[in-house]
Image (cartoon, rainbow, N blue to C red; front, side, top):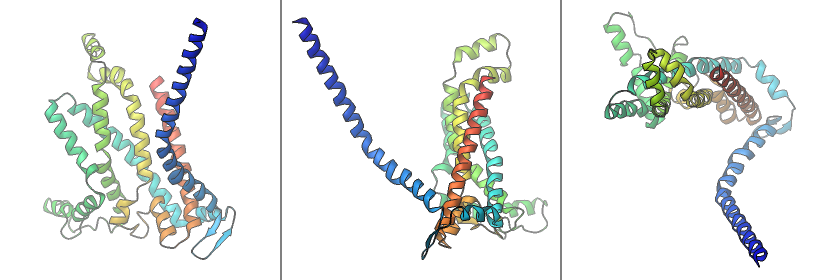
Length: 305
């Protein structure tokens, strides 16, 4: 009797587990369908069509011709240079500034801390178009705030066309990208600092550790996972910089603010060279994956040391 009861209980438990497993998969099914239909399938199509001369009127297999043309295209090489410049400047600047601001505002009163978080997060929740309009006015050659302040203080003798000068345009884009990218890291860093073991911090201070030693030995290892996430996300966002350029400069002047993302849009949706645009998209995806993997390894190596 006891054996039969045990078998019956086991069967019921197995049936319950299977039912719960099926229910879990059914809940995941809509997300899985969306992921496959809108991410996996387009990625495969992008990879396949990158080997074709795919335009509005042609669809001819050309092998690696699009990739060869890509590295012989001076506009693409300029866009690649600009993209790498944006990533190399923006990622360390955003990470370091966000960490510094977070360490400054974390010890203050909760209400003040929330106020500063809202201030820094405001550009993130504000629409890109609204942000671009404000910055375009500030950079305006005749009525812009920057020229007014610099001319009134005697720093410049004549107004500068910030977005129309090849020397300044790309740096203006980097500045705007910086201001719109620091909000989320600051919020994440403040939350991460709140999860640091306070008893370990107090013990280090009792033992005579200064602020830098306490931060480097206690807080920094604790917030390392957050730092890794911020670096990877900021890198991806910097590589995908497109909307600001489209709204402010359209890649000009003379392609000085072109990025790979914007040049993909230009080739695919203005010149209708879908195959060439997809080849650049595949190349961009590979670069992002390589950069993210290198950052992950370097950050993990730094945390273990």
